[in-house]
Length: 169
Image 1 (tube, rainbow, N blue to C red):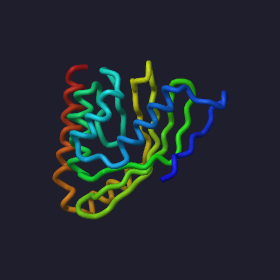
Image 2: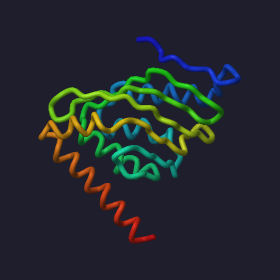
Image 3: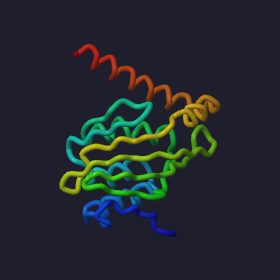
């Protein structure tokens, strides 16, 4: 298997912490053996107050929320999810990682491409924002009734969090 291409920044080199973090990211996504193993792999790579932003999910803050509100629902929706990093780039402490995610959704294979922007501090991710078009993923959910229960639970959680935050403000 070839190593994903790295695109050099203006200094034509990457901080060692960026290369190390991306290598661990690649390993964690290559073939996770379930939600618990995935969370255990990524937990030490994340700052305690890490912030995760992604389409169709509420923002997630903190390692425990990462496991409970991101990893758990993701593996409930696609138990065999994995990703392949296509290429990455770094600019200072900010990484851009282009990846293709694959897995079984409602009994049929699905895939989509994304780009994650990860901000590091002292070698730990303090923020990750994922950019992707959720349309194809939503279309796949709609056409696969077996995917509806975990997806609806995920959306209900998103709505409940949104309403709770609105009441507090």
